[in-house]
Image 1 (spheres, rainbow, N blue to C red):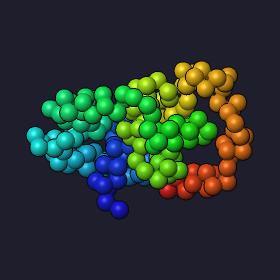
Image 2: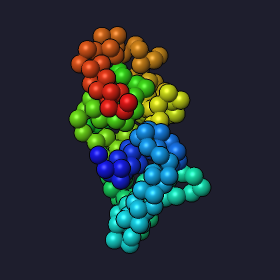
Image 3: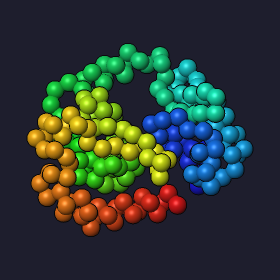
Length: 183
């Protein structure tokens, strides 16, 4: 698989800045090769007509949107955050409630779709929390205290059928597929 493509994918799913060393470790590549590929990606994306940018500060890199598009993004996010939760948002929130803490790739493996915007919306609404997990390169998501309060339980483990669904066989198999691909 192409190193540039792999790095693009990692930067896309990571919601935090990553060093070339972290990316190289995840891909089992030389840091120097990753740094060269990152420079190529910066040249590719950091163009006026591109909607994306590769930010580089110190040792860290992150994929972000073109700041010239901030007004369009604000309108989109405002529309997404207003009103009731959509079915995909409710599904995502349910998976996080029953399987959290969970990474974005794990969540996407279970749901079968990209969840970046949905996660951002749920974070903005205060329904989920994002935190670091030292065992995983990517951040993990879990139900927020605000969501727990709204559900009228003391913790996610008090949700109906929690013990059955938390360790459901189909979910375990899906998550093992994510782990196997990351090794």
